[in-house]
Image 1 (cartoon, rainbow, N blue to C red):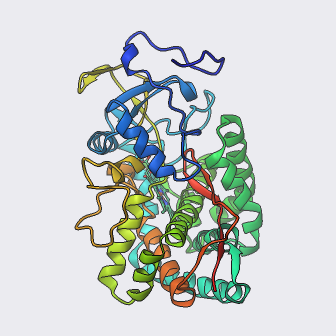
Image 2 (cartoon, rainbow, N blue to C red):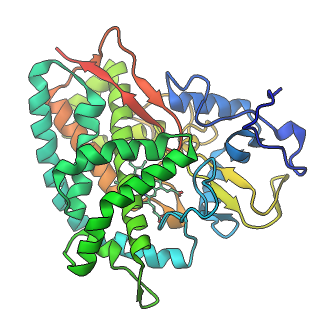
Length: 406
Ligand code: HEM
């Protein structure tokens, strides 16, 4: 029985009582210890598709096959509002994430063209230098707060390098990015977007007036049907790319580190096999599979029945990416990280038209982290007396992780 509260949505008539479950993706039981295991427990205890009155009222699809189907089928499951609770009416759409095909492709093209293997290769050398500098600095201390001291350092550096902005601005941008992806309050999230827009405004104008060879220039000078996008659209686009690549990578590096700190056998095996490229690649996919983080919602575009469930136009549904990786129908014993697993099935970077354009770059950052950290600090664990602080929401993450090493 769900208690009546002012912030609970009223159940629409087409939702049967037996499909109503009290699920709040900002507050999942057990998520303070293991976000993905908490999601997996919910997955096993729930019908494949259910409705929750939380966060504005929405459907949730919990099984991998359905989630992948919904991600790929943009005509029935639109991206036009991906955050929960939905933002107030009139909020500008996030470009390109909240645009649907075919216009979506026109906006996305310059991003894909800018993140070529050559660019990623160039960035990798830079990321490696930053990672090594930072690890060498931390090494003699014997301990650190891993999220601030390391996990956040790489992605912000990569972004500022990609868009050719001053590195010192990272202190300004990181707290804003945090609110944007983690606050359950849509007004605070909207304010964070506005703050980021205000920061980017000057630079967007500058690059539109004097184009450079950087990613920001490409984004803010996109032409749609022969017309350059507006200033507001340009700022919106740059903001999304910044948010898209910051907290996600930092969160994933944090989840990898937490897992390894708590699993010394896996840590040792990985540290001993860093030079085996095939092994390292498999290990990264397996760690990704187990630690999905991003959750975006979809809007149903027409009335239809799906697997016995009646959907109505404008219903919202959450198909959480991370549930694909921990689905026991797709991956046997899914909560166990097994570096010898034949295939790690996951949707950590999404699927279809919106599949993450930064996936190659993100995998490269994760590889650099593992190679450089484990070759210098092959043994580490969570500092006794401390507990990692985890967060759920649009992007699940780790807020604090104290590590120690001999
Ligand atoms: C481990 C790190 C990352 C994860 C887990 C991740 C996850 C995702 C997912 C799941 C989507 C699809 C969302 C949807 O279908 O609604 C996505 C889209 C996107 N990501 Fe990433 N991402 C990561 C890193 C990055 C990086 C490094 C960048 C920037 C260079 C980036 C930029 C974007 C952008 C711009 C989109 C929107 C694409 C579109 O709508 O066409 N992401 N990401």
